[in-house]
Image 1: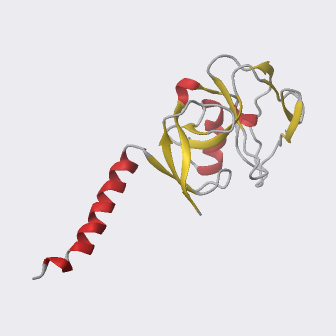
Image 2: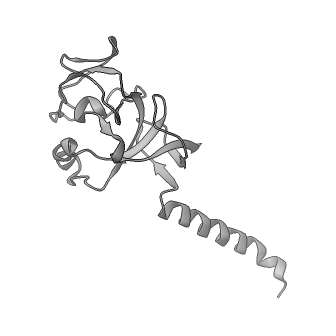
Length: 166
C-alpha cells in the first residue's frame, strides 16, 4: 500500500490525540451556556481582573438551587463568567438591583424562568483582596454572583479567552 493514503488518517488521529490531551487537562474547555458565547475557551496566563472571563467551581451557596434545577448538586461543575468587579470595588445587592461602584447594573430576580426561587446573596460591601464578582449581561437570566456572592481567588480554576465561538 502507498503511504500517501494514510497521511490524512494519521493527521486526523494526531489532531484528535492533541485535542484530547488539551481537554483532559482543562487547557481548553467547551462552553455551552449562553451567558458567555458558546465555544471553545483556552486557559491563558493572565491575572483575574474586570472584563476577563474566569472559570470556577460552583459556589456552595448555589448547590441547593442547582440540585433543584438539574437533579445534581453541581459540586464538581465549573461556571464560566466575566468578572464585573474586583478587589476594592463596591458591590450592593441589598435591593432588587445590582449596583457596582454606585452604578445601577442589573435587576436581581427572585425566581428563574421556571418559577423556582433563586438564592440571593445580600450585601453592600467593598470586595476584599482576592474577591471577584461575576456578572453576565449577555442574557437576562444569567446565574451569577447576584445569587451566590463573590468568587474567591482560590476557587478560580483559570482565566479564559475564546478560541472559537459559535
